[in-house]
Image: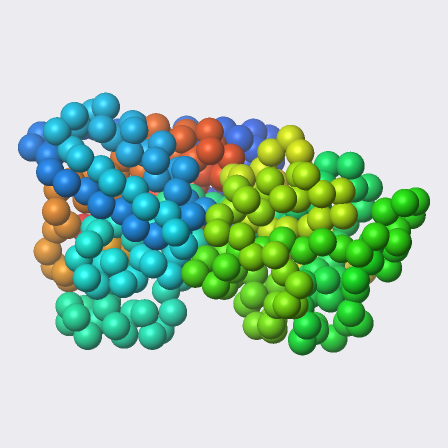
Length: 321
């Protein structure tokens, strides 16, 4: 869920009503990208799998504008971004969660300053079921009861679909659970926000990427899994969620991300090494400006994620100065 400062920014911008009217449209107030002179060189990105497709799309669009730029994208999980930035093997560190204090400390020990965090897209982290599963909604309490063995939300263990009110043949079937491995920022976010920092069940089928989670759920009528909404396919359905049992249920829509009613809303980031008071390398700065442009945010929509509002874009651009 977003922090209050982010919600305040969204409300001040007055963008919620607009988002509800046109949930997949890029904010018209976001400026188009203007190409700069002298942009060339190598650009490496190591980090989030959730952002891997989006980074690839951005790289393709950026290279069309700057043919002399060589871009390498690697997405094996958010936890691979901080070491890559520290070692200098990548200039861009995409992450689907915020850096941990230990990761920031490691970076600061190397560089003498903290990494810079740039928000580049919004996401409604989805709990997916097979498209033929009739379940109407879930609370995070029930999600915890399904996925966790420690049940820090206080609920009783849930192992079959019948315990969730599903009838018919599916009722007696054991729930087949798909998730990410511990290198994933999505794994970390889900563990913190859905499981209240509890432990996953040993029966969770850990997958190396979000696409495999969704593929597994699409092939298994009794399955459930989680990933960023950008990986949704026709074979799965995002289950509407409530923060508490009996609470207000919200679908994983752009409007509900903006008004904070969807309980698994998050920002997606790119971290960079920016020395205070000094500009970023030109190729790094322009890539970020491209991602935060009208064209770049249209690519966010194309990839199935939610675009930033103009106010949020302005806030991110300020951090580049």
